[in-house]
Length: 256
Image (cartoon, rainbow, N blue to C red; front, side):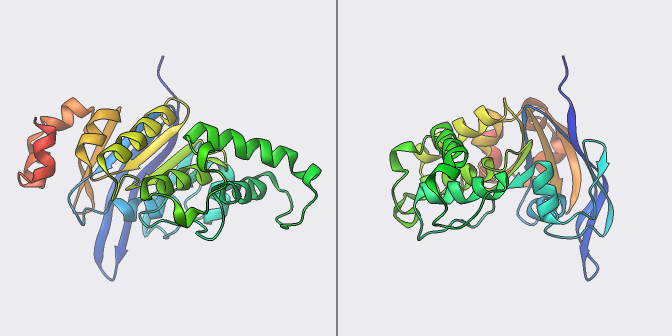
Protein backbone atom coordinates (compact mmCIF):
# COMPACT_ATOMS: atom_id res chain seq x y z
CA UNK A 1 0.00 0.00 0.00
CA UNK A 2 1.49 3.32 -1.09
CA UNK A 3 1.84 6.16 1.39
CA UNK A 4 0.06 9.50 0.95
CA UNK A 5 1.83 12.46 -0.62
CA UNK A 6 1.77 15.28 1.93
CA UNK A 7 3.75 18.07 0.29
CA UNK A 8 4.59 18.93 -3.30
CA UNK A 9 6.42 21.69 -5.09
CA UNK A 10 5.70 22.62 -8.69
CA UNK A 11 8.30 24.48 -10.75
CA UNK A 12 9.53 26.08 -7.51
CA UNK A 13 12.18 28.72 -8.11
CA UNK A 14 14.12 31.27 -6.11
CA UNK A 15 16.49 33.83 -7.54
CA UNK A 16 18.64 36.50 -5.96
CA UNK A 17 19.47 39.47 -8.20
CA UNK A 18 19.26 37.29 -11.26
CA UNK A 19 21.14 34.33 -9.77
CA UNK A 20 18.90 31.25 -9.83
CA UNK A 21 19.45 29.47 -6.49
CA UNK A 22 16.47 27.11 -6.94
CA UNK A 23 15.38 26.39 -10.48
CA UNK A 24 12.02 24.78 -11.40
CA UNK A 25 12.12 22.15 -8.65
CA UNK A 26 9.33 19.58 -8.64
CA UNK A 27 9.26 17.54 -5.44
CA UNK A 28 6.92 15.06 -3.75
CA UNK A 29 7.24 14.44 -0.02
CA UNK A 30 5.46 11.28 1.08
CA UNK A 31 4.21 10.30 4.52
CA UNK A 32 6.22 7.81 6.58
CA UNK A 33 9.49 7.94 4.70
CA UNK A 34 12.87 9.65 4.77
CA UNK A 35 13.37 11.69 1.60
CA UNK A 36 16.86 13.15 1.32
CA UNK A 37 17.97 16.17 -0.69
CA UNK A 38 21.61 15.96 -1.71
CA UNK A 39 23.96 17.79 -4.02
CA UNK A 40 27.35 19.52 -4.17
CA UNK A 41 27.99 22.69 -2.16
CA UNK A 42 25.97 25.57 -3.61
CA UNK A 43 23.41 23.27 -5.22
CA UNK A 44 20.50 25.12 -3.58
CA UNK A 45 19.53 22.59 -0.91
CA UNK A 46 19.12 24.93 2.06
CA UNK A 47 17.51 27.60 -0.10
CA UNK A 48 14.94 25.04 -1.22
CA UNK A 49 14.18 24.17 2.42
CA UNK A 50 13.89 27.87 3.26
CA UNK A 51 11.36 28.42 0.50
CA UNK A 52 9.32 25.34 1.41
CA UNK A 53 9.10 26.46 5.05
CA UNK A 54 8.35 30.09 4.20
CA UNK A 55 11.59 31.60 5.49
CA UNK A 56 12.19 32.84 1.95
CA UNK A 57 9.49 33.84 -0.54
CA UNK A 58 9.30 31.86 -3.77
CA UNK A 59 10.17 33.74 -6.95
CA UNK A 60 8.06 31.40 -9.07
CA UNK A 61 6.18 28.14 -8.68
CA UNK A 62 4.13 26.77 -5.82
CA UNK A 63 4.19 24.74 -2.61
CA UNK A 64 1.16 22.59 -1.83
CA UNK A 65 0.49 20.85 1.48
CA UNK A 66 -2.27 18.26 1.71
CA UNK A 67 -3.96 19.81 -1.31
CA UNK A 68 -3.72 23.39 0.01
CA UNK A 69 -1.60 26.03 -1.71
CA UNK A 70 0.69 27.42 1.00
CA UNK A 71 3.12 29.27 -1.26
CA UNK A 72 2.48 32.65 0.36
CA UNK A 73 1.68 31.52 3.91
CA UNK A 74 4.02 32.79 6.65
CA UNK A 75 6.26 30.48 8.64
CA UNK A 76 4.04 30.29 11.73
CA UNK A 77 1.02 29.21 9.69
CA UNK A 78 3.03 26.44 8.04
CA UNK A 79 4.17 25.28 11.47
CA UNK A 80 0.56 25.26 12.67
CA UNK A 81 -0.37 23.12 9.68
CA UNK A 82 2.34 20.60 10.55
CA UNK A 83 5.51 21.67 8.67
CA UNK A 84 8.48 22.07 11.05
CA UNK A 85 12.23 22.28 10.63
CA UNK A 86 15.64 22.43 12.22
CA UNK A 87 18.51 24.62 11.05
CA UNK A 88 22.17 24.18 10.13
CA UNK A 89 23.12 26.42 13.07
CA UNK A 90 21.97 25.34 16.52
CA UNK A 91 18.88 27.33 17.54
CA UNK A 92 18.10 26.48 21.16
CA UNK A 93 17.94 28.49 24.39
CA UNK A 94 21.40 27.76 25.78
CA UNK A 95 20.68 29.24 29.21
CA UNK A 96 17.64 27.01 29.81
CA UNK A 97 17.54 23.34 30.67
CA UNK A 98 16.74 20.64 28.15
CA UNK A 99 13.35 20.21 29.80
CA UNK A 100 12.58 23.93 29.70
CA UNK A 101 13.51 24.16 26.00
CA UNK A 102 11.03 21.46 25.06
CA UNK A 103 8.36 22.61 27.51
CA UNK A 104 8.32 26.13 26.06
CA UNK A 105 7.83 24.69 22.58
CA UNK A 106 5.08 22.38 23.84
CA UNK A 107 3.32 25.25 25.65
CA UNK A 108 3.44 27.37 22.51
CA UNK A 109 1.93 24.58 20.40
CA UNK A 110 -0.77 23.64 22.89
CA UNK A 111 -1.80 27.27 23.36
CA UNK A 112 -0.97 27.51 27.04
CA UNK A 113 0.45 30.43 28.96
CA UNK A 114 4.17 31.00 28.48
CA UNK A 115 4.55 32.61 31.91
CA UNK A 116 7.31 30.96 33.90
CA UNK A 117 5.15 31.15 37.07
CA UNK A 118 2.08 29.44 35.56
CA UNK A 119 0.30 27.17 38.10
CA UNK A 120 1.78 23.70 38.05
CA UNK A 121 -1.65 22.11 37.76
CA UNK A 122 -2.28 24.03 34.55
CA UNK A 123 0.87 22.61 33.03
CA UNK A 124 0.07 18.92 33.48
CA UNK A 125 -0.69 18.38 29.81
CA UNK A 126 2.38 20.35 28.74
CA UNK A 127 4.61 18.50 31.19
CA UNK A 128 3.32 15.12 30.05
CA UNK A 129 3.99 16.04 26.42
CA UNK A 130 7.47 17.31 27.28
CA UNK A 131 8.37 14.11 29.10
CA UNK A 132 7.02 12.00 26.24
CA UNK A 133 9.15 13.85 23.69
CA UNK A 134 12.31 13.67 25.80
CA UNK A 135 11.84 9.93 26.18
CA UNK A 136 11.16 9.62 22.46
CA UNK A 137 14.49 11.21 21.51
CA UNK A 138 16.54 9.72 24.35
CA UNK A 139 17.22 12.89 26.36
CA UNK A 140 15.38 12.05 29.60
CA UNK A 141 18.66 11.46 31.42
CA UNK A 142 19.81 15.05 30.73
CA UNK A 143 16.42 16.76 31.14
CA UNK A 144 17.65 18.97 34.01
CA UNK A 145 20.93 19.94 32.39
CA UNK A 146 21.49 23.37 30.87
CA UNK A 147 21.49 23.17 27.09
CA UNK A 148 24.86 24.91 26.86
CA UNK A 149 26.44 22.05 28.83
CA UNK A 150 25.26 19.34 26.44
CA UNK A 151 27.54 17.59 24.00
CA UNK A 152 27.14 18.88 20.46
CA UNK A 153 25.27 15.76 19.37
CA UNK A 154 22.75 16.09 22.19
CA UNK A 155 22.20 19.74 21.29
CA UNK A 156 21.23 18.69 17.77
CA UNK A 157 18.92 16.02 19.16
CA UNK A 158 17.37 18.68 21.38
CA UNK A 159 16.60 20.73 18.29
CA UNK A 160 14.71 17.78 16.87
CA UNK A 161 12.86 17.40 20.19
CA UNK A 162 11.80 21.06 20.04
CA UNK A 163 10.49 20.53 16.51
CA UNK A 164 8.54 17.45 17.61
CA UNK A 165 6.72 19.57 20.19
CA UNK A 166 4.79 21.13 17.28
CA UNK A 167 3.54 17.66 16.27
CA UNK A 168 4.81 17.86 12.69
CA UNK A 169 3.55 15.77 9.83
CA UNK A 170 6.47 16.94 7.68
CA UNK A 171 9.80 17.40 9.49
CA UNK A 172 12.59 19.14 7.59
CA UNK A 173 16.10 18.57 8.89
CA UNK A 174 18.96 20.75 7.62
CA UNK A 175 22.36 19.11 8.20
CA UNK A 176 21.42 17.46 11.51
CA UNK A 177 24.64 15.41 11.65
CA UNK A 178 26.99 18.34 10.97
CA UNK A 179 29.98 18.37 13.30
CA UNK A 180 29.05 15.12 15.03
CA UNK A 181 31.32 12.32 16.13
CA UNK A 182 30.73 8.88 14.55
CA UNK A 183 28.84 7.71 17.65
CA UNK A 184 26.66 10.85 17.67
CA UNK A 185 26.02 10.44 13.95
CA UNK A 186 24.84 6.87 14.51
CA UNK A 187 22.49 8.07 17.26
CA UNK A 188 21.03 10.78 15.04
CA UNK A 189 20.68 8.39 12.11
CA UNK A 190 18.72 5.93 14.22
CA UNK A 191 16.43 8.71 15.44
CA UNK A 192 15.77 10.03 11.94
CA UNK A 193 15.10 6.56 10.58
CA UNK A 194 12.62 5.91 13.39
CA UNK A 195 10.86 9.25 12.83
CA UNK A 196 10.56 8.36 9.17
CA UNK A 197 8.22 5.50 10.12
CA UNK A 198 5.88 7.99 11.82
CA UNK A 199 5.94 11.08 9.60
CA UNK A 200 7.46 12.53 6.44
CA UNK A 201 11.10 13.51 6.93
CA UNK A 202 12.79 15.75 4.38
CA UNK A 203 16.51 15.55 5.08
CA UNK A 204 19.32 17.77 3.79
CA UNK A 205 22.58 16.07 4.69
CA UNK A 206 26.18 16.01 3.42
CA UNK A 207 27.05 12.71 5.09
CA UNK A 208 26.43 10.29 2.24
CA UNK A 209 26.78 7.27 4.45
CA UNK A 210 23.85 8.50 6.53
CA UNK A 211 21.79 9.38 3.46
CA UNK A 212 22.29 6.03 1.77
CA UNK A 213 21.57 4.07 4.95
CA UNK A 214 18.27 5.65 6.01
CA UNK A 215 16.63 7.18 2.91
CA UNK A 216 13.77 5.65 1.00
CA UNK A 217 14.01 8.29 -1.71
CA UNK A 218 16.68 10.77 -2.76
CA UNK A 219 16.47 13.91 -4.87
CA UNK A 220 19.72 15.33 -6.23
CA UNK A 221 20.14 19.04 -6.86
CA UNK A 222 22.84 20.61 -8.99
CA UNK A 223 23.05 24.34 -9.73
CA UNK A 224 19.56 24.79 -8.32
CA UNK A 225 17.80 22.16 -10.41
CA UNK A 226 16.89 18.50 -10.01
CA UNK A 227 19.21 16.21 -11.96
CA UNK A 228 18.11 12.88 -10.51
CA UNK A 229 15.58 11.26 -8.19
CA UNK A 230 15.11 7.69 -7.07
CA UNK A 231 16.04 5.06 -4.53
CA UNK A 232 19.52 5.03 -2.96
CA UNK A 233 20.50 2.23 -5.35
CA UNK A 234 19.31 4.17 -8.39
CA UNK A 235 21.10 7.34 -7.29
CA UNK A 236 24.34 5.48 -6.57
CA UNK A 237 24.48 4.23 -10.17
CA UNK A 238 23.37 7.46 -11.88
CA UNK A 239 26.07 8.79 -14.19
CA UNK A 240 24.83 12.40 -14.10
CA UNK A 241 25.04 12.39 -10.31
CA UNK A 242 28.58 11.00 -10.49
CA UNK A 243 29.60 13.84 -12.78
CA UNK A 244 27.97 16.46 -10.52
CA UNK A 245 30.04 15.24 -7.58
CA UNK A 246 33.21 15.13 -9.72
CA UNK A 247 34.45 11.98 -8.03
CA UNK A 248 34.71 13.67 -4.61
CA UNK A 249 35.21 11.86 -1.33
CA UNK A 250 31.47 11.92 -0.57
CA UNK A 251 30.79 10.06 -3.78
CA UNK A 252 33.15 7.24 -2.84
CA UNK A 253 30.69 6.23 -0.13
CA UNK A 254 27.91 5.85 -2.68
CA UNK A 255 29.91 3.44 -4.78
CA UNK A 256 31.59 1.47 -1.99
